[in-house]
Each structure stands twice: as C-alpha cells, then as structure tokens.
Image 1 (cartoon, rainbow, N blue to C red):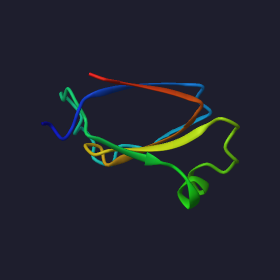
Image 2: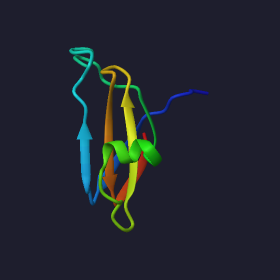
Image 3: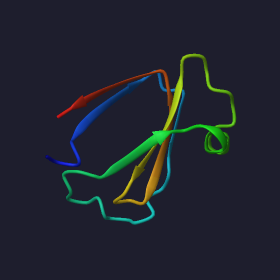
Length: 84
C-alpha cells in the first residue's frame, strides 16, 4: 500500500494566492511529480501571511513543495480534490 498518492486539486473563488520563490532552483526540471505537504493556515501563521480577516465562507491553507523548498499560501472559497 503506497504512502503517497497522486491527486489533483481544483481551486476556485481565490481571494489571495502567494507563491514563495523557489529556494532550490532547477530541482523541478524534468520531473513528472512533486512532493507536497499541507495544512490549515491559521493563528499566527495566518496573521503573518494574510493581514485581513478571512472573507466569509473562505478557508486558508498552506502547501509546502519539497523539491523547491518553498511554500504556497492560499485563501479561497472552493476546492475539489480528485485522487488519480
């Protein structure tokens, strides 16, 4: 049984999106996948990244891209996950 599974995430109703610069350049070149971790963006971490109050019915999440050693922060209203 695999520990990691491939998926696709479709996000809509984006209120805010932040992509950190890649800290390890050229590690994504030629790869057909990346390793991503994620979690709810809340508390101090949310306040540090997103200065405003969350819009009604919006959620905040962080993703960490291992190969680039960088974060994606997102505030949006809708998301759909599909396991591949």
